[in-house]
Image 1 (cartoon, helix red, strand yellow):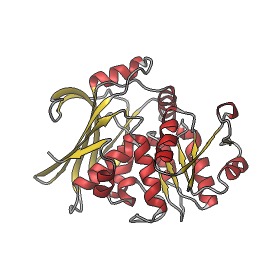
Image 2 (cartoon, helix red, strand yellow):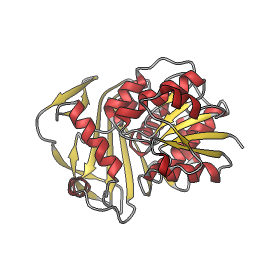
Image 3 (tube, helix red, strand yellow):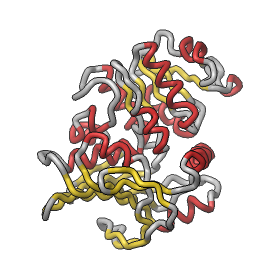
Image 4 (spheres, helix red, strand yellow):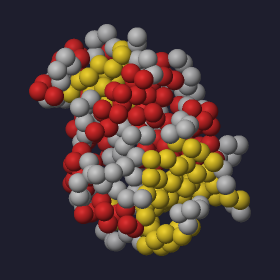
Length: 315
């Protein structure tokens, strides 16, 4: 079996990734910072590069599931580069994604390979098939709720601190940091969700991954208002969310739409990350080095491989 290191294997998403690797015939090698949570695993600290180097000995790739990624992404990615093995993470932190995409490497480095970031990048790339540029990409997340994990909340706090409490959007071909409130509007999701109030410019990793390789003037993310309110309340995670990701791409007077449906925004990050590793290890890539999901993979083919856990349609 091909060994793949999972850094942060004992976290909520990390456990899904370990199970997904094993189901697909890989050897999952658990790793992380806390030895008490790693019986039989490889302890490694981001503050100790030598420990990361030891953890990566003999593995074919690494999937980083340990947040906050502002603390872990660069050290683990750099260790993977030193070892000459592909690196994938599930980071939704915009600043951490920018850090990782700023690296230079001959080996594959693919950040944000998760529900927020990688999925919308693949959807937008597939929708733009044949187009060389677009005016706007809109990514609307319709969630039945959002009960965040402690790791999500910790990562959010670090991101807010790094941008001094400001929010960020991608408009006019660049990132903008703003102090004003999020705009509110209504988004008409495909049935059965239908029209729902959303917060606009609720920016996730999509505003980094999509314009990284697609010529797009504006990238705007939206999240259903009730999910934002539940996120703010930060209650105990009791049930998995159902989701609809509705992506609209506009160029001139033409519009294209693509929709993804599924359940559990944390669990579906596992097939996204593991499918990425599988393709990286088998040479099914378009580019080498540091790249995003839509940049390195055949987007339409990748999305088909996610069925039935993520169902994709073009209304």
